Image: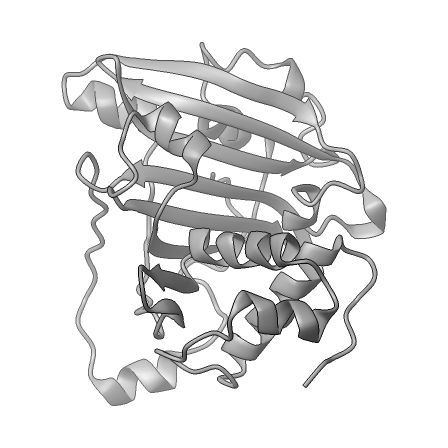
Length: 262
C-alpha cells in the first residue's frame, strides 16, 4: 500500500525513511523478504535506480542484507550494550607501541540541503561542519572517522590541523556535553570506504555511531568504521539480574552531571 512521503528529502531518502519506519515498527519483521525493486518502484512511483539506492543505503547501515539468488531481507533486532569509554585512537595506538598517522580526506562546512547535514539535527538550520579522516597504525588503515559537528558549539573546528591533533583531543578541550549515545553494528562498507581501508568486498566492518548532546542541543555525531579483523571493542561492567536491568532501563546516562567528554 502506498504512503505519503515527506517532501523535504530527495526521493531516494524518502523511500529509505519509509522503509526504515516499517522495519522499526515491525511491520517488516526480522527475516522478512523485502518486495522486489519493481514492486517498490511502482508503490513509490520512482525509478528502479532510485529504489536501489535507498536499499543499498539501508544495507550499508545494517538494516537489510542482500543474499545472492534469494533477495533482500530484514536483519533481526540487534543486541545493545553499554560502552563507557572510547579512547583517543592516537593514544590507543601509541600506548600499544605503534605509530599513529592521520590522512584528512575531507574538512568542510556542509551545504544546508545536504543529506549528510541531516545526520546532525542542529536547531534553526544551523551550520554543520564535517570531517572525514583516515587513521593508520604503522601505515595500516584501522579507522575511518566521519564526524559531524554543530558549528555553534565548536566554531574553530575547521581551522584545526587534524594531522597534528585529533578531533577527540580538540573537542574534549572545546566542548561540553551532558549525554552520550552509542550504537554498534556490523556492516558491509561502501566501495569508497573499502578502498580507503584497503579491504575487499567480503570483509565486514564494525560501525560505531556516537551522538553527543549538551542539554537538548546536539553537539556532535561521529561514525567510526573499523575493519573487522583489525580492531576490537571491549566493555566491562557489573552483572545485574534481569529484573534489575528492566528496572534500570531509562534514558539516564551513567554520569548525568555535565563533564567534558568526546
